[in-house]
Image (cartoon, rainbow, N blue to C red; front, side):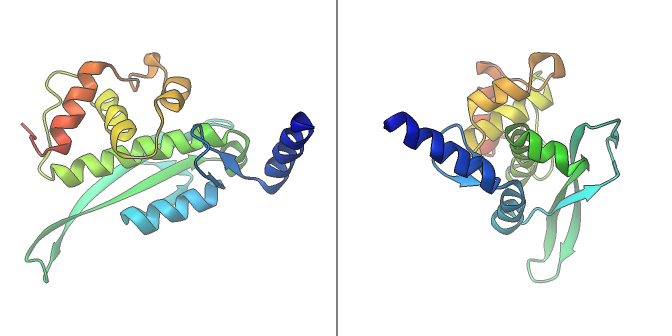
Length: 176
């Protein structure tokens, strides 16, 4: 009976287009994730045919974080404005929701680390992409399991314990 209930629940989730996170803490669709990132972090997620990082080829999925600073009259200071540009097909995002979520959280890691250190930061000799992934694992909803699964070491985006230490320093605003 328990197996039947589990199977029926899984079929319902698949039919509804929900994403099950590794922690099973919540389920959300990919568009819900986009809206939550925009609402909670103020970072728009744009679907584009060409990102500042390059173009997509075939049925791939690429994302790129871009940032710029604008003058705020009310704060009388420069304010970080960032955006996540996604190039690829929504079909790919829907077919591989965990991969798509992992990529978005990695890009959100870029934004959050620049919020802590607006003038840049030292990665202390570590790969910047790996430090960003470490930051995303520590301070967003990216799980270590998803990072290991979708951001392999060949891409330079997988992290080590040294990258985690650097990410913690960035979070503490110890930028250089």
